[in-house]
Image (cartoon, rainbow, N blue to C red; front, side, top):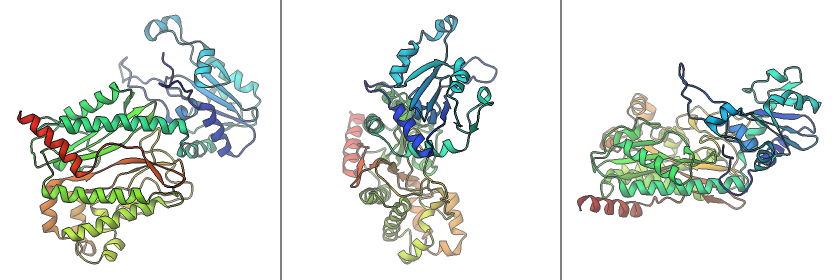
Length: 458
């Protein structure tokens, strides 16, 4: 049985418990959280791949199933609860470290077996036990329990990354970025989308990641017009096509989320190049604008303005820039938000603080965060432009929108499918740090693909 971190540093579980307790705004009480348990396929003894409860991992650093943790706020005492492994079970899963070794490895003050949860918690005489709403509380039901306040407190704590978390995320981005570049170098016509996904997963696992951060998207040509395309089963059969790869590895439960779009041939076709250049400008403009105390929604609107101006120049859009922006016409070409918070989860928690509502207009309705940017927040910046038949049909049927779109020119670009470019940035005291190092400039991508094409011909 392994311990949680792959580095020599102890995971900062207690600091995370303290930070969460501070967000609760109380001076006494006990935080109690449970980890996930193994889940079996129905009518089978085969286990689903285990993934730890994200909030529990944040507060404990434990990746194995069957654990629990508590924090006594008044005495500043962090308590780990460990499942007892019988000799019969140890035959199959191995003998775990001792209680004291696990206590030290995870940075807790005490460690007990899970069978003692009720007696240990009761001995603390808590004025209140703060639990997450989805966690079971049967053995503690005679004690005063609050299952409402903790979720917001831990979510807000997770929004701000400490040095340990940021270093893990840098490593996850380096590993995943390297894998993306390997795909660019090795992809050949005649391969299948599934081969690229398999190669990516193998690369990130071999370099230390624990699993895919999410099901990878490998979408060639028109498939890239499906935002969360995961069939990944089509042949890479045309040099004119581009392929959109949205994939990342999860390292120590912290994820990377990188998207790169590149030609299957030696270079971008004229139409693909034109759309790619606009998306790259959108991304670079937004990244350079990111800084503390700015609003995330303003970054989305900035990307839309860049897109609107350039799509007017291509002839895809027509009319005044201000009218196009006021009617959210770009939302019919970029139906998703500019990005999201990222951390333990790909679409991480805390994007909409209490009292913040979504804006129900094209593009903005799917914005996954709407809040002020502050130091130590980590966001993805992932503009895209897509030619999605169903929403373009909606646009065509709305005279107020259709008057701004030249559908004959749109038809010329339809085969592009979609382009997305995605990096992760951390907001700093003075601006930002880009955690993603994978190449994205047109000249760099085409140099890689030209060499790959030459290797195929040899």
